[in-house]
Image (cartoon, helix red, strand yellow):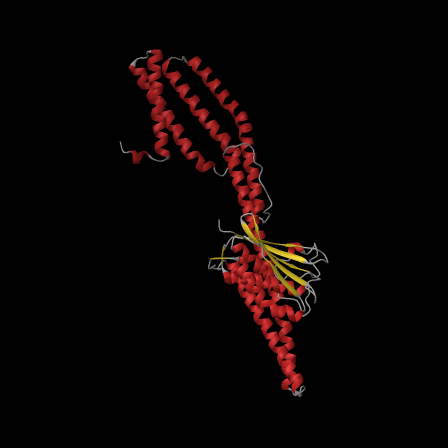
Length: 410
């Protein structure tokens, strides 16, 4: 037997008819001890009616697909029962029934067939209503209502379909929210960049025009203008560096060159770099390392960038004669670094947003103008890339502490 030729719905249907016919003939032979001729006649009749029923069952889904699901289920139930009753009537007429009894049997079969329609309708209505509810939910999702959810009843295929639909809708809703957030972040980024670029460019243009038009003639004023232009260029360069850094973090292209190092060494180098600046500003800078800290695996250059940003932020918000203290200490399986300042502090309502790009609280203003608003966002990205975390401890009017952790080497 060629098994490959029997594959598919048609082969399955005909094999089912053949098996049922042979089983029925064998049962009649055993139970009734019928003659061979009668068995052959009954078998032929069952084969014909069974084949007709199988053909109808195969063709019905094609031309019934335009009907509502409820009527399709009812129709299939009626076809199945009708085929069964037809087989019974044929077998009975061929074997033992008189014409009078055959008529009675046919009436009973028709009654049974008609009586099936009502229960089949009721049973199919339950399934069809669930499918209609799914259809309504999918229509809502297709129309843009990603908050639409299907009701999940039971654990059958329809329930699993509803669960999958709800999962898909939730995923789409999350994707849309992320897309909207990214779009809003892009707009905010462009707006902030435009503002931060326009101000220094306008300042430099005024100064350059004043010098080129001969408005400024004395060397002292001209040198002061040149110094201001140089400062604005440095700020623009720093802004561009920050933008490049944040873009690298966003794209996932940040490559860490990990090495074993002691955090205290990187902190000490950062303090030495900022020492002239804090002395000029009249700020006291101190370092309080904790003994016994273990090394970490980190990118020394990126870690220095984090400390640079945090120290710049602390200096910007600390008044003259203020204090900035850096502390290192073990914290569980990590090393904690804290930058504490005695500045105006961070308002509690600003604390959740200080790591957002271009966020500047109302009081977060330096003596020489606000920073780019990217420093803390960059610091968070670098620390999280190392597997650590960073947070702020606000204290209105009593300074602020920005701390981060790095996993220690076990």
